[in-house]
Image (cartoon, rainbow over all chains, first blue to last red; front, side, top):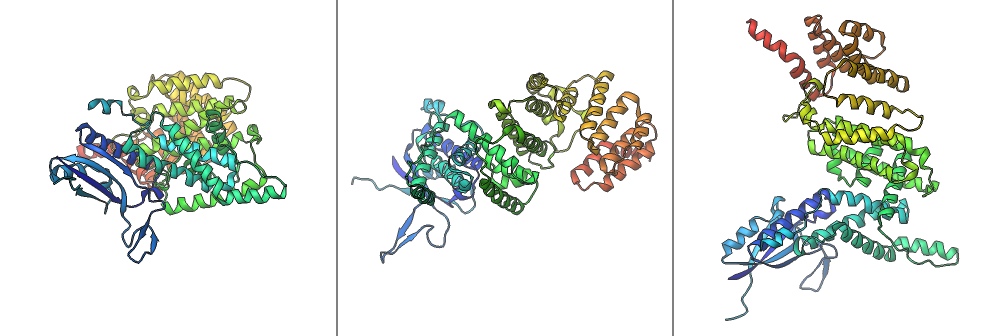
Amino acid sequence: MDEFILLMRHEDGGKIASPEQMQIWMQQTRDWINSIIAEGKFVGGTGLPFDGACVVDSAGIVTNGPFGDIKETIGGFIHVKANSVEEAVAFAKGCPVLQGEGNTVEVRRIAKNHV
Amino acid sequence: MSEILMEDIRLIPHLFRHESGRIISALTNYWGIQYLEDAEDITSDTFLKAMEHWPYHGIPENPAGWLHRVARNLAHTYYRRNRLFQDKIVRDLGMGSTQEVPEIVFDPQKIVDGQLQMLFRICSTDLTPAHQIALSLRILCGFGIEEIATALLASRDTINKRLYRAKEKLRRSADFAMTISMDKGKSIDSVLRTLYLLYNEGYYSESNDQILRKDLCREALYLTHLLLEDPSTCRPDVYALLALMSFHASRFNTRINQMGEMVLYEKQDPQQWEEKLIDQGVYFLHQSAQGDHLTSYHLEANIAYHYTRKEEHVDKWKSILELYDLLLKINNSPVIALNRIFAFSKVFGDLRAIEELGKIDVIPNQYFFLLKGVLYREIDHDKAMVFFLKAIAVTHSERERQFIRSQYLVDEAISFLYWH
């Protein structure tokens, strides 16, 4: 079985969202992860605070986020097990982040640590 | 695996919204109203932290306690780092001493104190009711701009401006040293008025968002209920207002049908009225019957009580009429006067009610014409239709126009079809 990272890209919603909206997002994300736990495919994951995020470029210049012209950036990721990239994509499709226009979930296979 | 799901804690609805009001109020109570915006920032950062942790690691067993702990830690860090601290040092240096960072505690008593303090501050600051309502929704009830705009049928821009100005005034009120020792007894009248208006905003709002309208009513009930927690504000008129809100709330679901149209009282299904809320109202009404001060809330609550009695009975309308007579003496408003005439017609008949209507001095609005139409319905059908059409002509509300058409003009349209 392969393992995948699902990277959630979205805007920093915390600045505009109401407490009610945040509770709804939180619960939806929890429910989504719960459905993956129920299949025994959840390995781990975490949210990534936008606060204090920065980028270091090849010239060693450090800039504060957001990153470049796009407003969407990685707000969190989860690590899952899946039999195929299709199964991992199916998990990704359930991600509540995708309710927001322009938001994405990137699916990446983790390189296996053996030959 | 399903055990994990079974054990997963589900949050109570609106937890973040309610905790928002609690945390902001508590922090401002510690720091002073000048730091309202900082308290708001810390509160939304607290929810962000929950969003970053809970979905991945599970919802904590005591979610509110978790939020309070995080808010307290964020607040302490903030307090040490920021301008607030420097301000204090400068001031304290002048006084020749340095103070310890105050320990912030979120215990139930402190939370309620903070909320009451904020409620009184908002309601006794010199603001228009519209500003007080927007501010209460934002600060005490944790509503977002979008939610307030939808509930109050205003643009986001309007609400933003309203909040900005209201907060400015609120900050300035700090200069007048409104501290915890504030005389709650004196300013409670304005608090009750704001809560009453907040409730009405939800109950009579034309917003199509039924859930949000209900939320407004629920919040008003919740804030009014808070007043019972403090001995100095646990008063008969508070109970009376709670009774009024409970009785109205019991009929909330039947007032608007699934198409979002208003339903006439006589066409509401009493089976759908919420018995539990009626019982709650009766309890509060009993509690309100103390002392010798009869307020308009007492009278309105009693009227609302009679409206929850299902059976049509002449005594019911006699009681309602008597209550309206008393209410008019306290509050001589056109709406009350028109409502009184309706009750009058139920007791003395339409003809005498029309005479009575001729005696009152009101500027004819849609409710005036509507009532006149209703009173003429059995006496002179054509005349009644003319008044209904007049009511349609003067109202600015599309929903009311629709309502009058569907409730009063439909019968006419049907008979017209049969004739031809």
